[in-house]
Image (cartoon, rainbow, N blue to C red; front, side):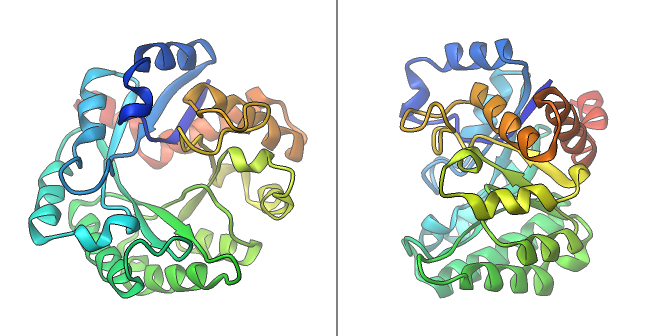
Length: 270
């Protein structure tokens, strides 16, 4: 059994063959997928909910990505509050900071990130973090961890650092704040030695695996559209690093995900 803890399944990239994509995931042993509900920003914030209503193996998130932070009107944020009450919404995100593209000004990114942490706290939902530093600085990681300490740590709700690319000290800080660390297809990239070193160190009961579909397809699919079935390749690389089998990694990360989100309780309430 495998769980893809982060996939973007809405939008045009999957419109022509979404059913087949999910069939391939099931055939690969992927039993649960967390569909990320950022869409293209305000106006599409219910995209993951629509999919989760249609497919029983999908859960959903809601949130405004840092790229679209400057579009986060009061009306959009109020819509998120309403969407967060849907029974298949289990997390708020992905939210955070992106200093690589800077599509929204950094002060706006921080303000909208803080506001969404406040909303997630009120909704009693954990948060899913997007963090991408600039090419020549790790400042985004330092800034995001500081904001989490100041505005989230006391919530006790924790969250997920999705598609982790930081250093071991960032991972340790996040673990202390109650977060899980999720590794994606870039774990398999030739130049990702730093990520692999961290993947060797994070306690196995605090690790998740993801695809971030349709992005970051792992080897041997690099350059193609990513899809949830390929999470098995991420499990395989993590297994190689930890001296385990892919099946053992799949089982452990599935337990971690289900425990963190109390899935057995949610299934009974849907």
